[in-house]
Amino acid sequence: MELLFPLLIVALLVPMFLNVRKQKKIMADTQALQDSLKIGDEVVTTAGLYARVVLVEDDTVDLEIADGIVTTWSRAVVREVLPADTEGDEEFSAPDDLSGIGGSTPSLEKPAPQAPADETTSQTTRRLDKE
Image 1 (cartoon, one colour):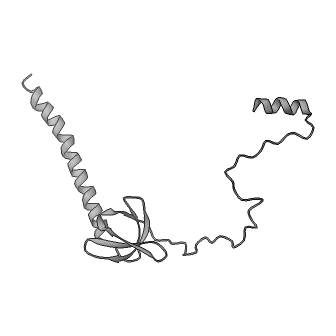
Image 2 (image 1 turned 90 degrees about the horizontal axis):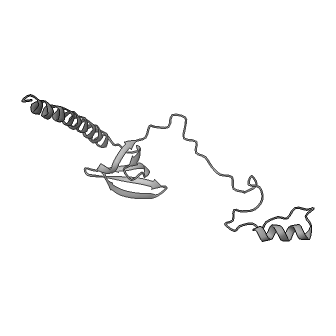
Image 3 (image 1 turned 180 degrees about the vertical axis):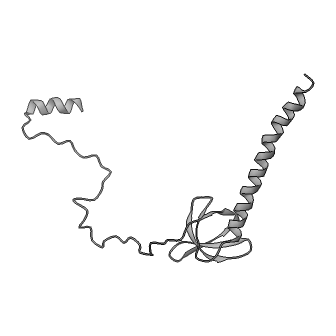
């Protein structure tokens, strides 16, 4: 019974010690990633923002979030650097006309119910009463 208490303490401290080591390794990897930022890197911030690095300073980075829109962020918000595109820089471009889209534009209005062509007046009345 005298040996139970020290064993219990060791059983609780070992996982805690291993967790602290794991956290230190993750923090060191994150710090190395943030220190290795360079202009042109595509990054993801902790807020989920995808952007391109345009300027790197001591504590901040300037991120281009759209063409010509540059914002300044703390370096600490950079969560990951996206891998470079190896397939080429060909971007998707939408056609200028809407010929590929069939019919009308999308609408939030509920369409009116369509009656079957061979429905009688009494059947129509019953169907509309149910709706």
